[in-house]
Image (cartoon, rainbow, N blue to C red; front, top):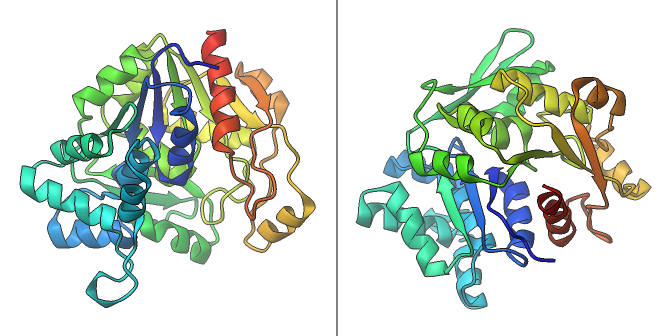
Amino acid sequence: MDGNGQIVAIGGGTGLSTMLRGLKRYTDQITAIVTVADDGGGSGVLREDLRMLPPGDIRNCAIALSNAEPTMEALLNYRFSEGGLSGQSFGNLFLAALNGVTGSFYQAVRYMSEVLAITGKVLPVTVEDIRLEAEFENGVCVLGESKIFQAKKEQESPIRRVRLIPEHPPALQESLDAIEKADLLILGPGSLYTSILPNLLVDGVVDAITRSNAKKVYVCNVMTQEGETEGYTAFDHVQALFDHAGVKLFDCCLVNSTPVSQALLDKYRVEDACETVVDQERFERAGVRLYRYPLIEENQDFARHDPDLLARAILQLLQER
């Protein structure tokens, strides 16, 4: 199965890099547009110490699309286990060094992409220094992407909405151009409030998606996520995206059709997560078409998308267009 058409994927985190790893086997016409709102872990440390944009999600996507030698990939994924660099990955430090040499995060990402000989492109959604703030239903607000999980657990209140600080940062023009030229636009998979939605809050992104003639698809998570979407149905995810965008952003949604094993369901129940229920009637009322494909890996410790199965489903949608 070959991809024939420009695919643009918008998101961040593990979900986006997993999908990219599958897609690169079938097409080189891929652009990943990645959030830069992360402020936790090694990325957060470099962000504070070096006043640079967080490299983690960008690094993961670049490695996922990489065609470099296995040793180079292992090197970039290497994480120091002790000393002052404990918890930091070499890939983050490499991108930080390029940022220092070039004086530009955008140029640093370009050079890293060249070193890794990546398939397609990886672009930050913006090069502005942004933070993510969450507002809960009880009115409490918390600033910082890395603080949202714990705050939600403490407040025991659903997330009402998220916003960027400062609000409405300008998007990278190259990212907007890619969106408008796409044949297939994909949102997700990934953390709803911390990986996908921050991209839509960058000025110009929603307008570019609306103007694009691409087929627009949301890839729904297999499971709900502790600290973000406990109790959410598939359409609850969609509704949050529409509410934040202010428009009906897409009319297709891709969901998993393979049952999750009882053993995995029991494991997820411990962390208040469950299989995402597909509430079909709400999709029908909203005019959002459901596509059901077997998408999850077998014999895994987690219910996650299989890169190859997900890529094949996405290419089917592209061919249908």
